[in-house]
Image (cartoon, rainbow, N blue to C red; front, side, top):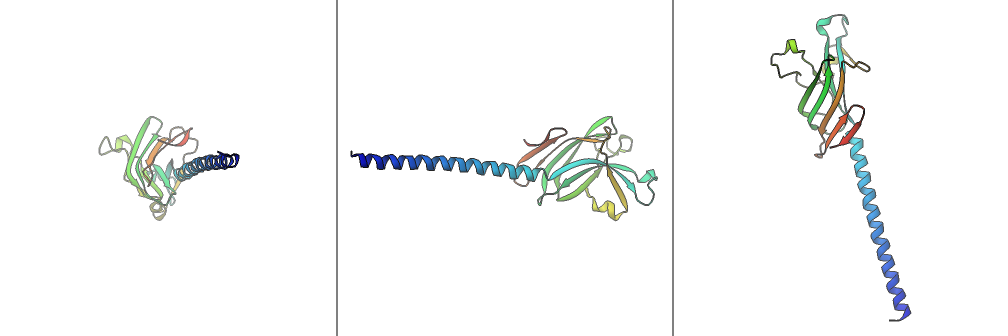
Amino acid sequence: MSNEALAAWFGVAITLVISIYSLVIARRADRTARADRDEREAARVSAWVSFVFSNQDTEDRSHWSNVLVVRNASDAVIHNVRAKAIMNGSEEVEFSAKVCPPGESYSEWIHPRDRPHKARAWALLSSCSELVRSDHGMRPFTVAEKWTLVSMSFTDALGKRWEYEAGRGMRPV
């Protein structure tokens, strides 16, 4: 084999190695970009515990309640939502819903003495816009250890499971 033929083969081999390396790098970058996009989308889902009251008479205790608010700012429904919250300082209560539509939804916590069924600690999920229409206000508990979200998990529209833990943030499961 002549030097020119050897040089040509060497050039082809180098070009092939560079092409394969570029393809591997591009796939890694695409995978990273997809993971970042998924994490940003999952971070659009959040939850917190709030106090609800009547705007007509803020001192009227008959209109007071404590709720779990789930904010789904994504464009799609999330599924198999589970949340654990400390309610009234003494118990960690688990909430679950098969679906949660986009927007802000809430579920009222039912105090143990008022529960028709011992195992049912939460009312059905409702839209937060219903509170506005019924002239109720809502304030999140921001520093109250007695009323706080501990964790939340859900499945996004693409079937990926996510989990939020207080102090640790959102991560794929």
